[in-house]
Image (cartoon, rainbow, N blue to C red; front, side):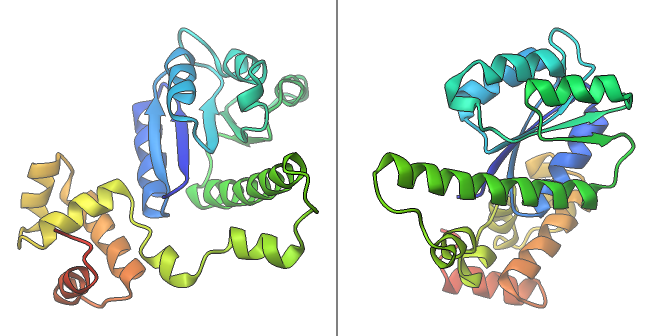
Length: 221
């Protein structure tokens, strides 16, 4: 299953751009428009990482992280603050609360993606060590950790997001980008992004090859 990331920001444009980028990168994404909604989603879905704005209605990012860190289940949840606040005192406040990184607005999506990948890898390593400690076994070797954190290429290629699977299902029915967009409530450009991601993940060159690959590997019903 893809790793799940929660994006909390009161700007719908930022939520959409980040979620589209992360989904195309192979993650599953859920979004919230304020801290209160984000807190509920964290408790319900237990995401692997949180990306949150600071200035939000109902509950700001600081209070969101403060409440999460009070819950033992989420003390190790990686947190990235997206903010226009850049003063040293405000950054210190965030780090004291338990955020892992500040990324000032405006930011590059590729940089955000690199930061997320780094934090998730470290988080997975910590969890491996913790499980080993709890079970009373020896700490895993670097080779074992690497094998757990870096799955075989084939599994990565076939690691489709829910939206990619929906687009693939419609592609096998012979629908155009426009028709798929109307059916899934997506823009043709967004559909094309998902198609490009599918081609990359399946290592196919065109839609015909993609559909044939999907049928041969039982990716669609």
